[in-house]
Image (cartoon, rainbow, N blue to C red; front, side):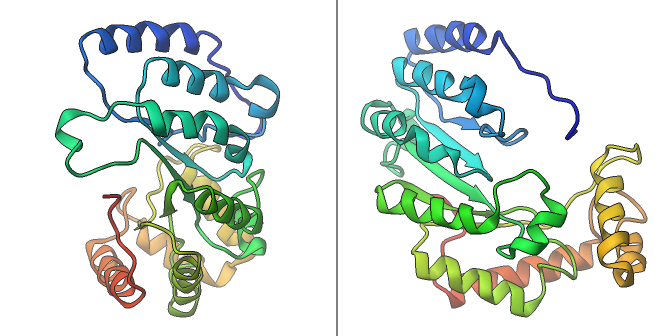
Length: 245
């Protein structure tokens, strides 16, 4: 995936048709950029497709939720502030939510060395933390997605406590912890790539990872139950909400 990238050159035309039709019917909803592909990949500096998309979203007054590993989102604060002022929330969310532009920064770790291993090409965790500070200082409703935490690497007690303490000190508005899912056995599938990185940098954990994902893309129920129990305890301990509203 690092070697090939497809640019959706017609995204603006498709989006405008959809939003124009929805806005006429007053069918407003929160647009998420993006749960599948980061809207601020490095090529965004050249193509500015996400910025143009935000301009269309602003034109039709839709609220937006940005999820990113990049600090490039700071570039678009001007548009996001206008969206936050002018967008129309869905009717059923109006009593619960006042923010119309939300920005979530995704972290698997706040350790730059670990980030370089598992997130090659992404903005470093340190720069991401700086961007998170700027986002909160600018008054945006902003928080953290801990997706995914890495078993036996970044989901351990000391590492978890450091992350939660750091985000508490920054006064993030919410935090979403999540366990990892690994798909596929092809050369560029997530399971193959993560296991290759573990084998190279954490060879003592290979057997544990193979056991965790021996029967599918999810970790076993015992791991997930322990994970959510621990992260819920940390949310209470550090007084952090695990929901956006």
